Image (cartoon, rainbow, N blue to C red; front, side, top):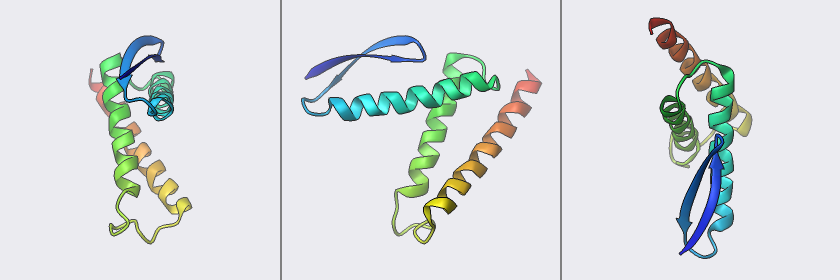
Length: 103
């Protein structure tokens, strides 16, 4: 096992991975950090826990949108997938704004 020290939204974490998987883990950390910082900087989501959950939902939606070649998105172009993701982000932003207004 290899241990890596990484930072996500300024917070330090020590993560373990198998030898040879360091690059993939660092790329995943970088991607997640970008998502979380983008949410934080938008000002629409408050609190690290909420930011983490919304980032996880965003990443999961992206994954599910492109993972299945037999699924409903199999005939879509990259542009169409990006447009669908942007649409999903718009919905998430609207829900978050509504939720923030209630608190």
